[in-house]
Amino acid sequence: MNCRVRVRIVLILATLAAGVLCNGCFVLTSERRYKPEASSSEVRSLRSGEELSYSRFIESDVVTLEIGVRNSPGTWELGFLFWVLPFPINYDYVATQPMTVDVFVEPKSANVTFDPSKTFFLNANQGPASPGRIFYNHEWFGTNDSRAFPITSRSRFVLEFSLWNNAHPNRYAPFQLRVQGLGVGEDPIRFSPVNFKPITVVWPQFRLPY
Image 1 (cartoon, rainbow, N blue to C red):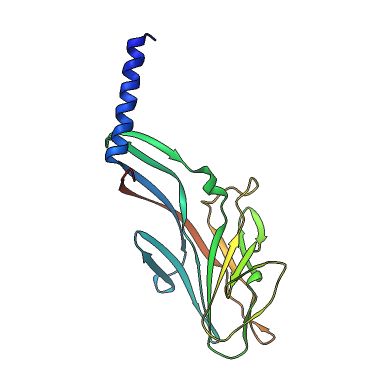
Image 2: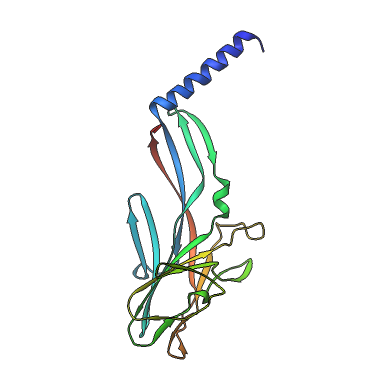
């Protein structure tokens, strides 16, 4: 490669870089959402800005249960310099981040309790997995600190499942969440597992350089 060709390549790259810094670029962004597989009357959608999330409602005579999985960033973006030249961006580290589950419990009778450590992740490739961390009442608990919390009003629990490792890397496969920690006094409250199906959503946006 002679000197003149090298100079041209450098100028082209410098021009592209200047265009991005001054004008921004068009980007296709992906996001992974987890939608319950149930009838529309049993699924609640919540929109916050451009983000849309879903949760599953389950009613019984003694308690109302709402369970949802938070969206996670996609593992890629596709940018376009000057709206024409594509360049991919990969975020492989996202694939190993924990899955976060929100559980809301609202009692309809007295003596309702909930042990969040007895909420299990299930799919076709592995046995039941319990949450690695549990957040309630402004505190984080480990799963070794298993306890049944008394539920006297609508209460929220945040569960983190660290599932995505070399043994179970597939975040795109359907899965179930089984809630087994609810009870009234000594009697357990039984629910069928909640089915979730991951979906990938892609939308366009213009990203400024600042």
